Image 1 (tube, rainbow, N blue to C red):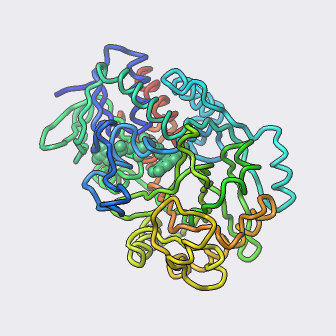
Image 2: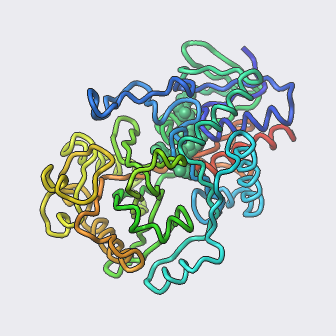
Length: 455
Ligand SMILES: Cc1cc2nc3c(=O)[nH]c(=O)nc-3n(C[C@H](O)[C@H](O)[C@H](O)COP(=O)(O)OP(=O)(O)OC[C@H]3O[C@@H](n4cnc5c(N)ncnc54)[C@H](O)[C@@H]3O)c2cc1C
């Protein structure tokens, strides 16, 4: 079976490379291989009743399938070079922003019209942050919401399904170089192509390592982000979220001069489990539809750990910490802030008596048994700093879920076309280590598609 282009992974990176290829050249023969299910078959079995925690399905409905890890995400589409990846280092700042805006227009055309675009430009919040030792990063953010994000994906799939050959539940096992292109092996079948785009996201990180080893592509891996997800009454953060929806705020701790930052803010949202390679960590999302709003806002507080030689396994370090929480809590642990600072574990009764109702059924416990002291001290310091701009953040009943880990894929050595040292083999999206967001991953897909068509 021969194709012009084979795309591995149907997350935002893969989807937008396919979309752009079909727009630019309707004659191209394109195939997408996806380990997970089509969108409508992606159903996580956790129902909070019979199945309460992750049962480690062979293909995780949250992370794998059409739409990738972003399918049930909050659909916060950040248009910025200040976070979400380092795509601009490869393609230039202007080009990166232009492509992110281009994808935003497509999202609007496929069901996202009417959703709100927030911006940090000209906001008084920036000054208020600075006065309290906090730094607000610049961005525009389109909030699609989990519901509209799903509709956009459904519509894009309808557009693509007759132009591209989809192979669902077909994880690619091997990529090999052949004369004039590549051969991929999946379910004991061989498929050939001239150009191959790999976009396997975070869930494909381990597999990506084997591809790089087989094809002698240099990589490096030295970063992992570790922290907690904070959940509090939405009113406490409404001064920020009403105006900006999501604010990325950075704080330098006094004790260790470490940087702690807010990440993935979900006003009126819910805290959720995330499963990466069988390890359960925490994440969050929220719906655009007010009928689905909760009373709480959640966001992550993360500390980046950069390691130096000889240590190479930064993700392994993050995994070990997450495994510790899974060992103690059977999954994610939840603790009241008041219990944490008093040095005692939370238990069921204390959580129930609290004024914040948890949106995730996590196990009450003690995060200080899991998270390294230096990181936890930084998080506690930042909660007190945020309390100055959003009074109530440091209330005893504020809930902390742990651990939240942002695994970074190892960085694959790529040139400015996002092409590996093997001509015609491109690595994009989060699987490349270049991007960590919907917007950067999608933009990288468009960029590579244009490069391939240009020849
Ligand atoms: C709960 C959650 C909420 C999030 N919220 C946001 C948000 O609001 N805003 C934001 O910017 N980002 C968010 N993110 C991150 C965002 O989803 C990712 O940055 C984005 O999806 C990356 O896109 P990608 O195409 O690179 O990879 P992915 O979306 O991870 O897609 C990769 C796909 O490749 C498939 N795959 C892996 N290995 C193979 C293989 N060997 N063969 C075939 N297929 C394979 C996987 O099944 C997957 O479907 C969130 C992530 C999660 C988990």
